[in-house]
Image 1: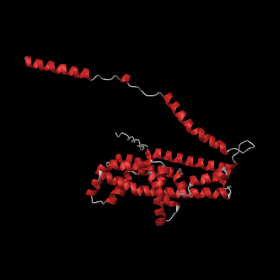
Image 2: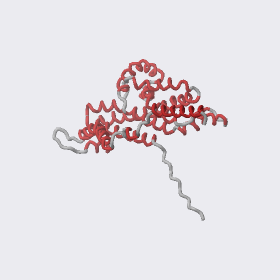
Image 3: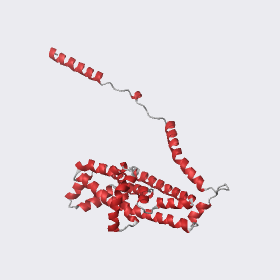
Length: 302
């Protein structure tokens, strides 16, 4: 070996040693494993109490007999057997019917406007992705009472064009559910290579409507269902916009009934909470990973 080769070898070895010295590897033992299982259960228990204590207080309140003391389930039986008076029955079921109508119309408006826009931006105008995200997430930063101030003159025009029916609230509700629906659909849309699928469909002669309904929508149906369910939950719990625009929905009806019989109003509020909780469980199941069937073991042939 010549002196030049020896010098090069020593230089390479020195450079490698310096690199190893400059970048010390962090031992695995120094990585914090996170909170223990006991700590996690304590945190979950504290958060659970924050939710369960108010709900338990509501249930206890509905079971009271009154000034005489004691508990019974007569009010719950009256709710499920149709034993409510006309003054209690009519406002609640009118508000419930209006809220269900609003939920359906809001979901339709949200899907018709948001899904084609998101798909078009994803395929043809990816540079507008940030702008669309900003516009869709903006309503969550604006209080509902501020939205009503801006929507009041708009609804004077809407009333002249479409009437003053309660279903027109779906236009305002379509705005407030945008952040939740956008996130649900966007999460599913990012996981699908929409550009490649659309180009493959176009190469086979498919039109844009065919691509949307037969290629894209089946691949993002989980996101669409999650967006629909969370929109229904938001609509059923909305009060501010309906009250300030003088419309009747479930929440405004509960306020009216609570002035005559607060026990019945609390019972229906609990039922609405249970329904929203079921919707959230459905969203979690839909958004979970799909179950894969175990491959069947084939018998070995001789």
